[in-house]
Amino acid sequence: MRDLVLQLCALSVFCGLALSLTPEGSGKKAVSLCCMLLLMITVLTAIQSFDYSAYSLEIARYREMGNALADRAEEQRERLSRQVIEQECAEYIVNRAASLGVSDLHAEVSARWDSAGVWVPDSVRIVGALNQVQRSELQSLISADLGIDAMHQEWIIDET
Image 1 (cartoon, rainbow, N blue to C red):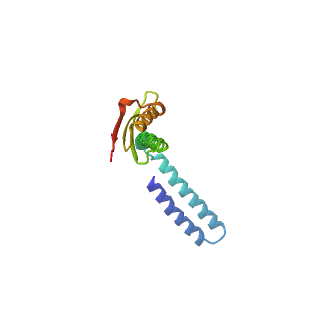
Image 2: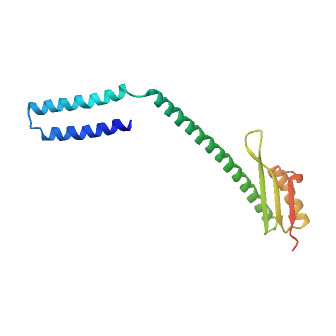
Image 3: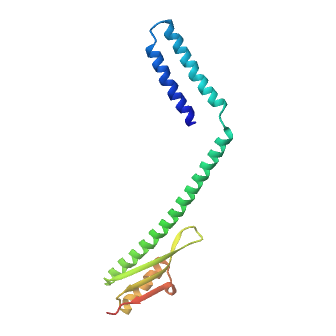
């Protein structure tokens, strides 16, 4: 295909020069007709000698590349979706803790793939300085709002 384009470009430049150098009249019409025939023959020869099997292989190769790119994009979308869920749940826990009077708290949420086809919060690791009442209240909120039961909540209480 590249060779055809190069041939057509070269012939077009040649025909343009020939037409511009030919004086007006019947000679110019003859040169114009010859240039048109030359360009048509070049295109028809390329179409006749076109390798359709190589073209089919290239199309199949591009289709495979497209499928691979789509698969990678889907994997990245799922990974990013998981990270967003984990980050938003962690921020929610920190905000809820702040509403309970806990200012220095760090939450790390892990999500799992649910049978419904979505990421759901699965476990949480909380590091911070809380008293027993704050911990109990926050633990209940996490269970009720995020669905993370007490068994999947890891608490590291900083008592300094």
